[in-house]
Image (cartoon, rainbow, N blue to C red; front, side):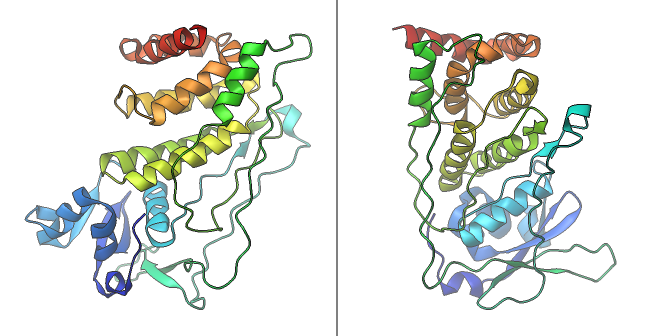
Length: 305
């Protein structure tokens, strides 16, 4: 991510309409991070002439994650939820993200968003300040490479090798802020992680469309770290299937590129024993001309070789 100097904040905020909400971001930050978006707001396109751009292809949560990253170099994924099943009645509830402080904190950088539907009123939404002074070191991730299969069916060595290979994936992401949240491992099959996974994938798709390469790399790192400590219960295969289905429907295949599809293909590799038993996963393999199946089979051949 390129560094933002004071000139960025001297630029005028530009208005985006996302999901019917008005969200403002400094035009200088747009120019810094995305050439396609910069052409939209500063060139001869109609959005620049009318003074705002309405984005139809992104939801509010995803655009706010982009804004947070643009200002601070981090973003927060969605929270997990609890399935309303009898088994989860006595389980812990998800920890809610702290609400945004709409007061003016010291040294804060600001962006503006309209949270009120009343005409003429705009809510001032403050982004966290870039880190200053001494800070805690970024926590190191100690991934558990123990098998997730049941005791009745011990994992074969190939699965352990594939999981270790997946965990050891590296992404060239600059260290920008110790505030990037550390992923949380799931505690049981009652926890629904579908929105956690999808929130990462949606940011990736947005960054891919608008040519924001550093954000794509950060998403891959964050999603990888989440999947690396995620225990796939058979009851929760649907969470992974939803992630794969969305990712393949909104990206294109690129041979030899470390992209979202490559990450998910490797994940399918070491979890194939669990996924292959799921009927929805079998259906997924044949959807859209078999793109998932093609990558899946190429991965299997690669592993065998």
